[in-house]
Length: 271
Image 1 (tube, rainbow, N blue to C red):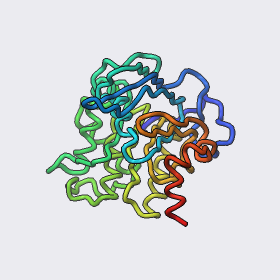
Image 2: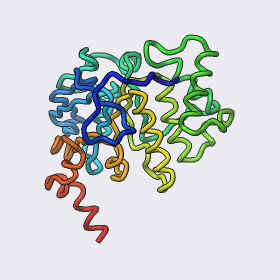
Image 3: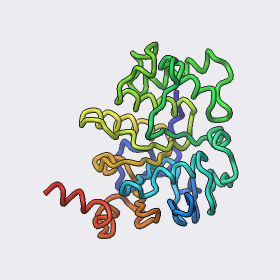
Image 4: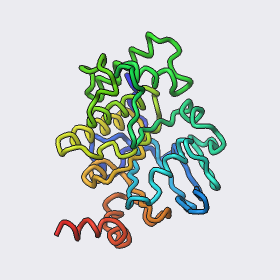
């Protein structure tokens, strides 16, 4: 098993039955006034949000809005200039990325860079040896977990193939498998559906549903609105590094500020 099923949280009203149950206890992640500057340019400006246990939070906004920067601040690959960040009630802003991973924060990367020269299985086994609670310290167990994760994302037939020989869609699945092998309780997904066709998008949506059904909370960056509408319990919208909306997905996507800043351009282009 990748992660245990949750059965102790009340259902989220209006959520499809195949989504994980969203708890009403302390949020798994809380961010307050998170700020990041690059050489004087404010990329993320005093952004606050939370993620409930078992929830999928969508994160959308125009290119350059600060979405990937925000994920970097949560995962620890970027250092915040100001703000507060708590994971399961614990302050983590001063922790290095690897220590946050050991606590249960996993992520995928928009630019996919598998370990060159290693097989698909070996790539994922590295994730298993590195992750939550320090990872699996026995190679045999790490490889077993890697096989489980690869079967879960649909790459079970490619375990002995070199990872750097995979095509784009399979590299997306590999990113998910590497992150899952770390046994996260919170998974940050950065555009795992970008560049996929309609069939591939549906397949990845189903994989994310299954991940969430195992009790894993997710923060999902996507430009694919079908995915956001299908998956996200709530949606957070950034524009020029600032939060302009945060709430139930249907309400957020109908917000005039969101339509003007992000969705309106797409509607105009489609007409």
